[in-house]
Image (tube, rainbow over all chains, first blue to last red; front, top):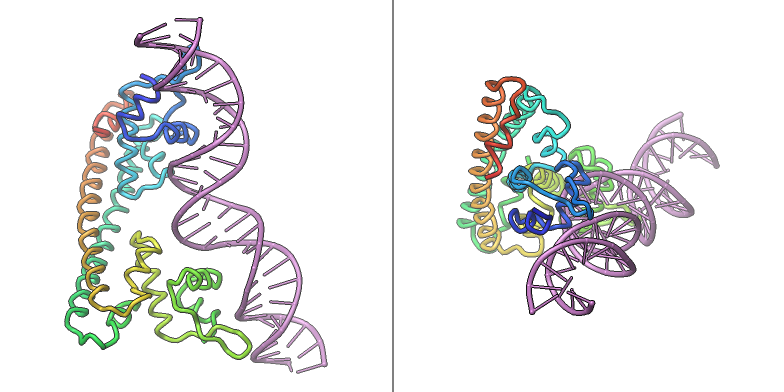
Length: 126
Length: 126
DNA sequence: ATAAACCCTTAAGTATACTCAAGAGTCAAG
DNA sequence: CTTGACTCTTGAGTATACTTAAGGGTTTAT
């Protein structure tokens, strides 16, 4: 398939696909004799993965590592994946704490008299 | 205290403090007669909060909302905080799924023969 | 009183991740 | 066979969040 179809099937714009190729997130596409890029189902899957990972806050550099573009060394990919899982664990813990803090903030806001200072700065920042 | 001390106590660079002021994340500092910015403990707390929120992936715009810089309307701050808590909830769920996916990936990588293709592209992207 | 350390402003530069524009070649339908 | 949709490349522009540079006052310690 050509780049337009790939774009429609993944929701990634044509320009962004070319950008990802330039950044080596996806391999250099094979070309038709006239120079058009040709893509396969594997490319669709790879792009969908990139989209997912991006939504989760991974940088392109991290995604590149995850995809292990430069190497087919499964063991290396494994250790990267495990390290990322660990990072996610920590991030989840942090986010959970932040969520609790926000809810506490909201509760305090609801209770204080309307002309009291907002309690946010008191309850946070330390 | 002056900007240098504020910087040291919060880990935020002097330039970044001035940038945050320019972006209205912190209020315009009062000045000495010679034009030096003067800060208080409240400013320290506010900056520490900004640092925490940033680590959790909030944008400066979102943090600005959280801090409710333009308004002392506690109820508005409350609703922003609750909305953010809800967003965090969803983000935590997504991150948890991603962590599971990564661990599954790692497990598969560990099992496949070393010359098999890496199973990542198969197990993801759909 | 003078040198080091600190502060000021304005403006430009950096990294990430796109996004758009210009100018030109290619392909499919009527 | 031509028109419109699609693709190509190169290069510049955008947004976010800083960071650095240039040039010049202020404070503090000796």
